[in-house]
Picture: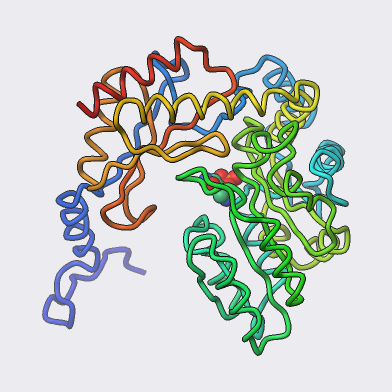
Length: 392
Ligand code: PMP
């Protein structure tokens, strides 16, 4: 058989190379200031990182590192298979038990990422013939899960509880799920969880809350926004979380009533057909969780640092959101300007996040500043000096 590729017939519909359109798209993104580039960082960076999600500063904590290294030596580099075959270790079971206890849930199930946890729980609980109600600025993993679920999807305006109630009241579907981020990842505001739970309860729907930015940060001891809203352990509320932010590791989890978790073991495709989370990540997350439980004031420390960043930015005449978790965002406007401002912050030694379309709507690009529990007052001053320089 010849391995030579046939000469393309340029006279066919479409002409040209089938990937030529990529060059056009790249040019368009470049011109609109929307081209993204990977910037691999070194392990030891000079400067201050306010772009990452290591909210409690635990990623490089010696106890977390040691737990990960020990797990690598004990279990090897990977989990060797899917959770239902060889990929469940006693470490996974231990993390599930302690995470559930910490957040006041009956049971937990560890996934390979928070993204896959959202796919697994939404597609596992709702399908064709069902309804998912999703907040307009929910995380992309919820958006993608809604699409994949094949349920009818109703998008409601941001934090509009009445709109959620209306959609639920007027639905024809029997099964319904309302999905919402606990803490919104860009602006850092918290969803009205008590009100949403009252509505889902009234209309017989399940409430799914993504605690990616709540765990370790919000509520007493960082037990999350659901716990803070008095909903921990509710039999109609399900949570997802990531192990990659406050817990400084990698992976995700679903938490909630035991019957939900048991159902997902049998039904969540992103659980069943994915290799189990690497033991080193599980052990690192478990070590971080134990640190958080032993030092519950870490959560308040990160929130106080976020408030200090926002207050400093406002004092400099900038429009900063009021942080309820670790994050504050500074409104810039046009994508190109946001990109240039973030680059100037980096020049001044402070790395900040830059959110442009499609992560946020056109015209409201912004800088995202993520506080950490271990920031000193000198770090805060350095961050604000860089911000003033970048926006002057
Ligand atoms: N949900 C939210 C709200 C997030 O911000 C993220 C991460 N950016 C995820 C889910 C996905 O978590 P992971 O990175 O563990 O896949």
